[in-house]
Each structure stands twice: as structure tokens, then as C-alpha cells.
Length: 417
Image (cartoon, rainbow, N blue to C red; front, side, top):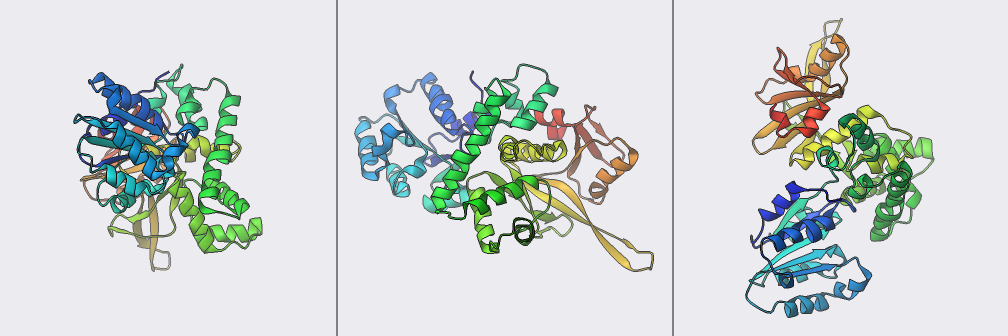
């Protein structure tokens, strides 16, 4: 079963022959290799590129281990380039290549080479690519399947699809599995044997239990404000561990580096500034989050919020948590200040959206509660409330749009509905 990932294919097509190294990043098993070695390779062949002019090496395969040596890699590629026509160099898991920065910079000197690589950690984030490759890197970050992509594979209605997606997530291999037992075993093993093992080995972590405890704490707290001192208190009071705040910060960075979690900073909407701690953390895939907790804490409200965050990021938006200050008078006549939260402030270029994940608004009191922070924002950017219920897209007297999660996830340009 082939899952079309047209957005990422188009991202690659639009970057062809731009004299930059195309770096595909993403969590392990999110489909990077499939994108490069199947979808993009098929596109090249369909457009007339000769197979002999596609040089592809998967560095995580045992039989290609010798090419992790930088000199052998360069010799192999330069030997394969035998004429003046364009060659396409596809390298998978390039972080396994020793001195990969020097190798890739050397390949850039080949006038008839277009280079595409994948990597599974933050050494391939944009800010690092610019440093490592002296401004010659161009990042495409691939996410697990969005709900719209997931629907390509699901044999059933949208409601049953949602129930499956919110539980098992969108890692491509997971959605092709037929039984719940397969999915549970795969996701549970993937977290233990791949994600955590990668981090432990890469950073020589000895306090492995503390790392696992931290993952559990973050998984239990998606959608909630937290910070390192708060997590440290939890370790001391609940886990009875004296792990330091510096170690916790390092471990959180390692989880972010591996694309397991993503941080949403707090942004003062009226003051137009970032506030700092506390922040929120969301998982790159809700399936691996649920697996980490043994599928015991499946709170649909928080998971829906996580999915909305991931959807916005997959569309290219930067995502923050909005804060709006409300001032009033206390009964004793003193001025009081209250901070209201906007779940997401999504920005892309000149576009901005304020978004609330409300799940359900069964009463007028609940509707007003969800509107409260949005009504305190007086700029011209669109304000949206997303609910689980199937509703018509409406706009109320305050200019606030309400839409269903299914409209948001499945309809093209849904933010403009």
C-alpha cells in the first residue's frame, strides 16, 4: 500500500538543482527513507532520469557499513559519476557517516550533482545545517502521517478513523498493521528499542531510569504548563530522586533533538514578547506517547490538542502558547490581573491565527469560557475555536470562527473557511 506524501514530494521538487544540500529530518520511522528512496526516486525515473544517474546509499544497512568511512564514500560517488549529465545523490541516515560535514561540502563541488540526505537528530535542524554546511543546507522536516494522509489507508468512516488515529498515531508502518496487538507491540518496542536506545547510546547516559521517568512525566503532562523546577520537584517528592535541574534540562534537549517532543513557548499577545518558563511540551506522534504510558492515559481532550499542534507545524506554522492579560477590580477595590491562555498562536510569514482547542462546548458558559481569551485580542488576525463535535463552520458576533476537528484536519485551506 503506497501512502502519497505529496507535500513533501513537492517540497523536494521545488528545491531541485538549487545548489544546496537537501536535508530531510524527522523522527525515526516517520517515512524519511520512503520519501527519498521510493517516492522521490520514482519521480526522478518518471521524469526521465537514468537509474545509473541515481546514486543511493542507505548507511544504516549492514552491507553499506564500509561507506561510513568518509574517504570510501567520496571515492565511491566520484567513481560513479562518469559523465557531465546530472547525478542525484541520495544518502540515508547520513549522521552515521564519519565527518559527514566535510564529505557533503566536498560533494557540493561536483557541478553535476544534486544532493539529498536524511538524518534523525537535531544536527540536521535548520540552525545547525546553516552552521555545518556554511549556509549550503536546505531542510525539509517530515512528520508522521497527518490525519488526512492517514485517511488514505483507513477502511472505514472518519469517526472510526479518528478513534484509531488518536490512539495509535500516524507512524506509517503502524497504520498498515491490521491488529491492535501488532500496533501496541510495535509502538511499545519502538520507543524502548529505538528512540530511547538511540538517545542513551548517543549521549552515553548512565541514569537511564531517570530518563525513562522524565519521558513518563512529560507524556502525562501534554497540554499542561511545566518547567524544569516543577519536574525536579516531582522527581524529589514522587520518585525520590535527587537528579539535578541541569541534567533534566539536558535530557529534555536530547528528547527534542531526537524529535520525540516539541516545545511550545509562551507568547504575550498584547506585549508582543516571549515570556519564557513555564512552557508546554507535545509529542511528535500521539501513538508513541500513548505507548510510553501503556495506553492507560488516553485523554481525548489533551490528545486532540497535541494533534492540532502537530497539524499546524506540518503545515509550516511556528506554534506558541498565547497569553492575554485581563485586568479587573477585586471586591476591595484593588486592581487585579488575570492571565488568560490561547492554546495556539500560529505564525507563517505575515499570517497569524489564534486557535483554541475546545473539544466540546455543550453550554453557553463553556462557550464563553473558550471565547474569553480570544475576545481580549483586538488585532485583525483570525480567531478560531476547534471542537470535536460535527458542526457547520460558523462565525459569531465577536468574529470568532468555530469549526469541527474534521473540517480543520481534512479540508484544504481549512484555516480560511
